[in-house]
Image 1 (cartoon, protein in one colour):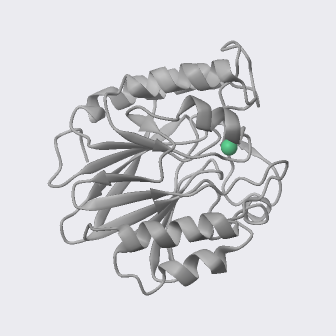
Image 2 (cartoon, protein in one colour):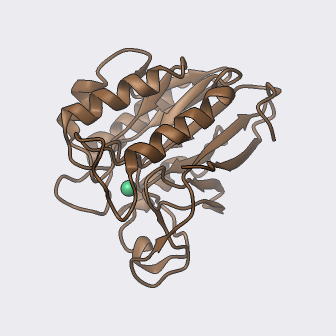
Length: 257
Ligand SMILES: [Fe+2]
């Protein structure tokens, strides 16, 4: 796949940027700011022919407003409408304040052609695993009821599906049944798109395509029993949303980060 305009809307996903107030801060042996900026540069030519932007959480590592504001300005520079949602490292109030409005926001939905992107908040304050509470599930019900497009994507930080890496599968979404109860059987929902696991994943669960995407910060080693870093480069994902409801997608690794 290339940056040539697709036959249908194109969504770009970035995730787990883990920025700090001080851009010189290292984490897990890398500089999150430098890897994010390299990813942003690599995304720029793709953004010209894209229609939407998605950030699936862990926007910042330290909950600081400085990092949220810097990230917001950088994402807006891609000149795309976008959705962001919190991960376990985010500060919900800080994120919602920084992304209250504007082209890239923490809104519930974003329409992209004949597709609707629905964002969910799976953050449990003070916990690593994710959870969709009663209010969030009700918001999902409303978003699906109001959806007027042929197809939709659901995005949240914590995967409601295993990725085959034991320690990460233990800290995903803790109530996946409540989510899939709503998605299974709704032919419009074509994929669940996540972050959190800092690695690429492309599978199926409960009749739904399940996707996860590498971090721009440090990667985790796929298949590891316990915490282990993969020294691979940062990446972003492109998703071409076809008129027949299919999704063509791939991960672009960023060299020189
Ligand atoms: Fe993360």
